[in-house]
Image (cartoon, rainbow, N blue to C red; front, side):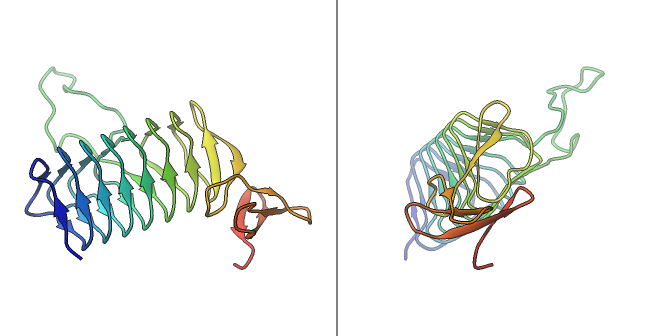
Length: 199
């Protein structure tokens, strides 16, 4: 499997791009970034220095993933999503001098396996998006998102549970169980934590 990089993309020689991955027009992949196999970096997207992406990730057009973000396998990041990386952003220090790169502590967003971040959402670091969770378009995520949670709003709050297929789960036959209407997979809920039934 070959790597496809469009001529207008800016990919650092120090970045690692996995087999089968594509970097489209005007995208930028900075030094030290690592992309797994079969990743797609859309038009105008930005991948910061030392960002880590697993296999089969999709970063849609104009998404901005700032270091030190970590995306596990199968993560979807929608168009114009922003991952922040600074607790207290300022251009200048209190004395008015311009801040330098080492004047602040970078904090990152972590996206667990299979999670999806909807278009124009903002994830305010440090925050973790759980396995197979779904962040609705336009949300602002300011706290960790549980595995399999569907969150929406400003700030984002859990509305439903979703399964691996991404569709909302339906109540199962027993209390505390949930069923995916698309796959038939079952899930169990205990103390606001959802797990696949086979675990």
